[in-house]
Length: 93
Image (cartoon, rainbow, N blue to C red):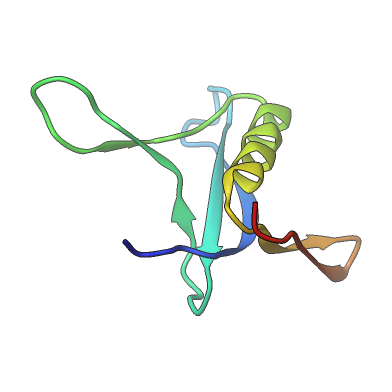
C-alpha cells in the first residue's frame, strides 16, 4: 500500500460561465511532487471512474480540507498564510 504524505493544500476558484456561480475545488500536493491533485469520489453504478469534489461555498471547501487533514495518520502540511509559510505536524495516532 502506497502511503501518500500531503504537504500542501489550496482551494481553486473556477468560473466556467460568467453568469453562473463559481465552484471551489480543494486540491493537495504530495511529498516530492509539484503537481496539484483534486480530491475525487468513486462513481457508483455501471460506469467506472471518479468525480471531482467541489463546493459552491468557499467555507465548505475549507472545512473539507480541514477534515482531510484530520483523517491522515500523520498530518504534515504547509499553508500559505499572510505571506509566510508555516509548517505543522502531528505524531502518529
